[in-house]
Image 1 (cartoon, helix red, strand yellow):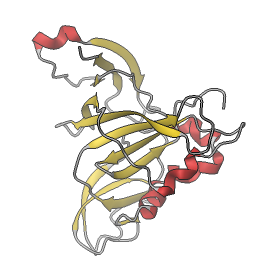
Image 2 (cartoon, rainbow, N blue to C red; image 1 turned 90 degrees about the vertical axis):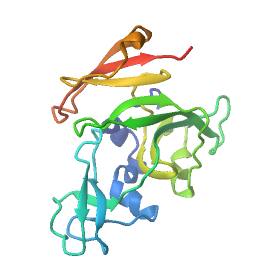
Image 3 (cartoon, helix red, strand yellow; image 1 turned 180 degrees about the horizontal axis):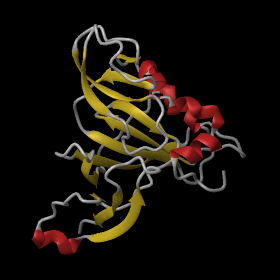
Image 4 (cartoon, rainbow, N blue to C red; image 1 turned 60 degrees about the horizontal axis):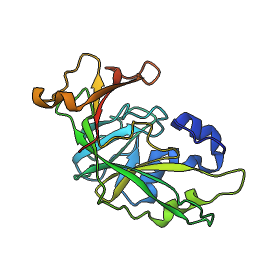
Length: 227
């Protein structure tokens, strides 16, 4: 690929041999998580995360928490699945190729951002900030992403994880601006930046509504680099 893809829909078309990673139920099953599709109930009652099996729009569309038990096989909509809920720090991590190296396993972690969850149910994260100390070890399951030929090479890929538990894989890097701190701005939702610090940030317009499916719509980011 001459130009890295930006969105999951681009990656789906660009990398047909790796489309299995778009299937979040398959990924959860391969990683050994307690999970199952709509129509199958968990064996124990508890709080689970429900998501679409496929979501090429990103932004956590269709994800929510739900109390489920052995008698709840028919509570979910077709095309969704449930998975055990993980507690910990949510990170978005980009991997890519090492410079001037061409071997199949010459990739490295390029960036890592921590997501701070929002207190409002309308917005998933209120802030993202760089974490330069955390290093995620990629399990063998994902090693085939680093396979390449001259005509088929995934330039950058993104992994979302809660602590060391991988929950999503994207065959493209994060599309968000590269700053030390990012505060998403959504239409009609206030942004909590102390008045004495507001001058440290600049606003970058980066509208996203996931094809009209994201409410409220994202308008952009307040961003800054730390001194």
